[in-house]
Length: 123
Image (cartoon, rainbow, N blue to C red; front, side):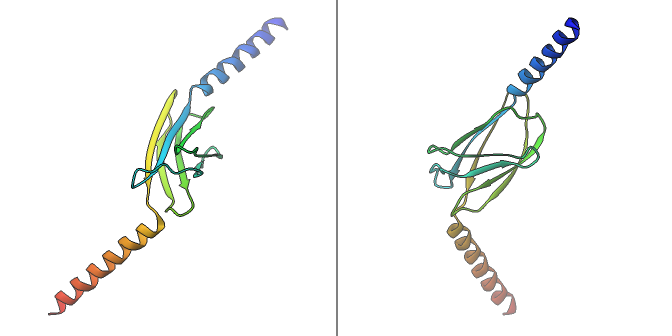
């Protein structure tokens, strides 16, 4: 009985130690390099969510070392999906988010360019 109990305790300690080493840290910034505070960072496969601090940084610990789909969302910004291969120890990501109004501006430029190109093709 005593040997079984020690084996179980060692197994639990080993698993906890291995999971404690797998961590995802990152920073979210706008395309202007401004930190994005309060953004939501979700790991889809593991069902874990956190928010960024005032410096745009976040940290998630006790993760499985697997391929992960990370969804980043912030009010006023276009959401982003990032595929990350989590490895034992630390995995790092930094991503830039576009503001919703910047996306609309880019769409209008493309639309205008396409219209001008179409008019040029007709002539």
